[in-house]
Image 1: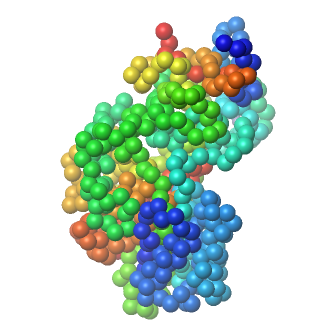
Image 2 (image 1 turned 135 degrees about the horizontal axis):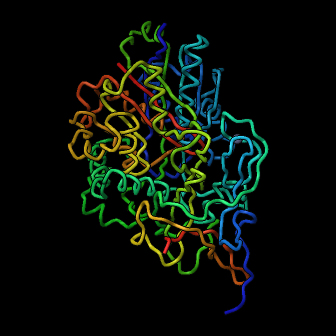
Image 3 (image 1 turned 30 degrees about the vertical axis):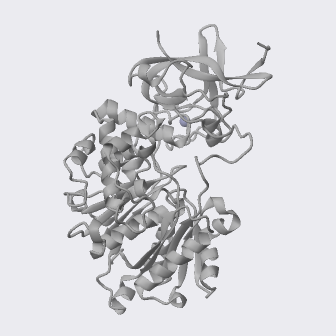
Length: 144
Length: 393
Ligand SMILES: [Zn+2]
């Protein structure tokens, strides 16, 4: 296997520290509302005029709000393996942030292994590969 | 003062994949609506078009494009874009002009020619665009519908058989509708045998995209009376409200909801009809028939609850009882819905109003809802757009 250069498919959306993988969100310093993705200039809470935000790691764990899978190869800009490998998709509710975040489920875990309400945790995995690159993405994984 | 306007005429070009320009379909629908209204094209004072984004400049200036194709005659013109609610916003523009006294007679029109396959985002790497991001990680439109469907299964105990029953019902309704694209009665076995697209939804649970056009001739109540049409169906309300922060569910094309740490959550879908009920003074118990945006079979059940036609979580039971079939207590999608039409984005919200108009006139043939006096539509598209229209006799 040739060595591929690993890089996140988007810069600055997720990170890894000693505690593990996390999404990088923003938090309004006026009202506390969280944002993901973090690119936000004006707070979208209609009761808040905040324009100052701090980067914050979002909760690494949450509860499965709902889930599905992609049985057909999605269109571009999705970069599919050949042959296409179906994958599950999870919507996970973060308690502290009171928000739901979508993401692919780790490879090898299908919809049969998922139940609404189950605890999930964030990991970093492979989204796609080219001959020279491996593109990383955040993924949801059932808590073991 | 009455805030109603009259629907003098409706017309459609049949839905399908015809491979022609959207202008052709639009003109056919407009001419059908003019004929139905008994109105000459040259007496139309305002042309309100719903934009279609996949057809270049002509689609983005749809009002003028149709006005030219019908023959420039100096009418005032307008074009509206609001994703799936474009047609409703075009209708709202006409209603405002009529109620303000600026015009008496208007043509409202939407038409589309759609590409094959998944609706996909524009090309190029655009990480600032949530639509690009979600397709890059492989989350297509059916994935959102599937997550809503799965949520119903978990919260209310709905089953895939319930979702199939929506398809079976709508295919029975659309079977005799000459404007429907798919006119075939489906069985539970056929739905179950169709390929899985996004679990729990199969191909037959998810709507296609179609070519099609719908047009309305609307007027002031005064005008309708003067031409002996004072009894024509009326538009009692149009709601095109935005969502209210914070979003309760994950909306296409977003990858996250709003955070609700500093605000309560609000359902966008439920807000659309709520505003229309408030505007019209009509209550859910007055409704005789509904046309809802069944992008998926399961979504029809969500809409029935959002329209307050039953309590939250009880739509599947209502469906199983037969109440939502033509002949039942509260028929839903007598036209056959998107299941039988497929979605022609700028035309679809107007097609819903066409169907309600035929229903309220008692001209819907085999799919007629007996004694229908109040109809309601529900529709939702991308980027915080949606609509509800209430039509009454
Ligand atoms: Zn704020």
